[in-house]
Length: 421
Image 1 (cartoon, rainbow, N blue to C red):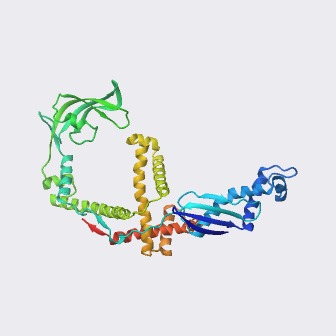
Image 2: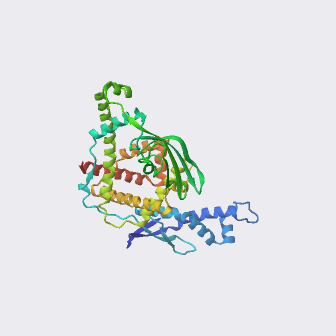
C-alpha cells in the first residue's frame, strides 16, 4: 500500500492511497468467503462454493464492494500511520470506481494544528504560601472548643453562633412534602447547613416564635413553604484553652504540643495543595499563551470524553446523567457550556505542551516507556509483555510515548516557572 499526504487549507490534509491489486485481492477473496456462507448455491454446502462459482453467479463487483466496505477502515488507519497524519475528525472518503485492479481512494481530513507558544519559558504562577498561619491554628483550636461546648438556655434573640431547637415543616399546595420536616432539631444559627432562607428567618427570633418563609429546594419544582417553631435559644459556652483541656481533646499534654501538631499537619496539607495549585496554575498560564484558533472538532471531542467519563462514574453509583442533572439543578445547556469552557482550556494546554515538546526537543526513552508500561500493567493486573504486544498491535505505542513526553514538558515548565506567593 502506498499513501501520500498533501496539506490543504483550513488545517486539512488530503491522503491519496493506492492498495495494489495483489494486496486488495486478499480482501476480495475474504469477501467471497463471507458471501459463500450467506448465498445458497445448488450443489454446494453453505460456505463451500468456490470463488469462481460465486463470481459467475454474483459478479466480481459484489465481492469488490464488500471488500471495500470491510477493509477500507484498516487501509485508512494504515495510511494515517504511514504518513504520520494526526487526524482529529472523521474523513471525507472518495473511492475511484473500478471493477478490477488496485483500490484507489482519497481521504480528506482535519488534522491537529501545530502551534508555537512564545513566552512558555517565562511563566508566572501564583501559589499560596504553604505554611500554617496563626489564623489557621486559631480556627482549628476553635473547632475543637466548639466540639466540647456546653449549651445554655438564654432568654434573648437568637444570634449567629447560637443553637436553636426548632420544629420545621415543609409544604407545597397545602400538602406535606416528604422528607422536609423535623421535630426537636438542633440547628446552629448562621451555619447555612440546612435550607436556604432558614438563617434569615430565625435571626433575631426568640423561644416561642412561629415563623414562615418560602424557598426553593433542590429536587423539588417551585418554592416550598416552611413553617418553623422556635422552641429554645441556647448559647454556646466554650471551654478555656488550658493544658488540661488539651489533654482531654487530644493525645497531647499541653496546648503548645497540640498547636505544634496542628501546625505540622496543616502545613503538610497546604504543601500538597500548593503542589496541585502549581501544576494546575502552570497549565492555565500556558493555555493563556495560545492565541491560535482551536479546532471545534478537538473541543467537541473533549466535551464528549468528559461527558462519557461522568456517565461512566455515575453508572457505578447506580445513577445516570439525567438524575445527576436534576439533583444538581442544572439544565443540559448549562452543563454542556460549563464542560465546553473547561474542554477549551484542556485542548489549549494539550496543543501548547506539544509545542513545548518540539521546542525543547523532549523525548521519551525506551526505559521510561518500559516503566510506564510496568505501571499500567500492574494496575490492570496484566503482564507487561502482553500489554506491550496488545498496544503495538493497536498502533498506540507512539501515542503513549508522546503522552509521556507531554508530562515531561509540563514538569519542565513547572521547574522553570516563576512562583509568586
